[in-house]
Image (cartoon, rainbow, N blue to C red; front, side, top):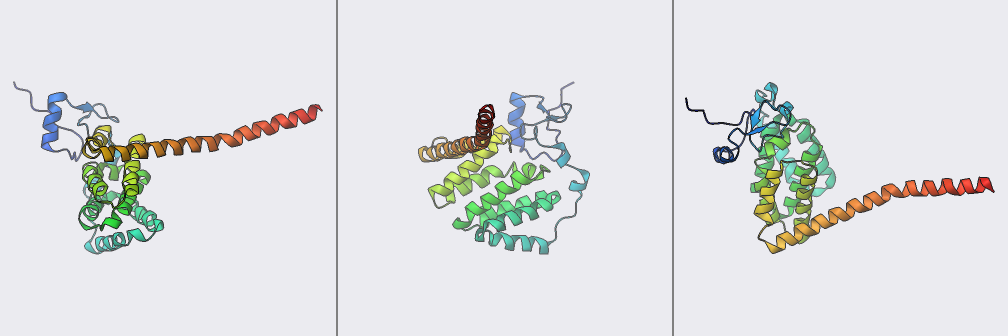
Length: 240
């Protein structure tokens, strides 16, 4: 009897048929899921949290059009201040069970509606949502959209500094394992490989991150060193 073709067992897997077919040639039985090794899944889904896919989410009532209109109006004023980004990020995270609907709103805004000067603020909003969302739902929903968003924003932002900010955020996602390595690798290949200027910007961004990290480590160790010196000085005084 012929063995049936393997397919990803992750609930609501978003991999395309082409991606599944390609994986079958390399891993005919897929990968064991990180949380449940009995679950055979694709590359994209293997690290996504199982707890993010609940029956409640699947049957959750959709957000009404009036609420979505309000969100879109808030997005339109995103460039006004950093506080706006943080406040809007909090709204998105509060409604995390509607991440599928709201991720599409983010995608449409970034790709279709943003003016060039708004793009970097939209990317900061997406970054803040991803870093602060502890449900994993936005990570799951944006996994299949983040490459298109990142490519579009990197190419359309108006300055080298803004491109460097995009590169820094992508590098941070890699360091913090926000997305699967294969997702970030595709972003790197599509944007930075083969483009000398883009590759240089990425190197600059990584270098700045490394310098910031080194400065943070130095600041954290200085009080300990000073305290130790003070104790030694006091000890010397007591002996005298």
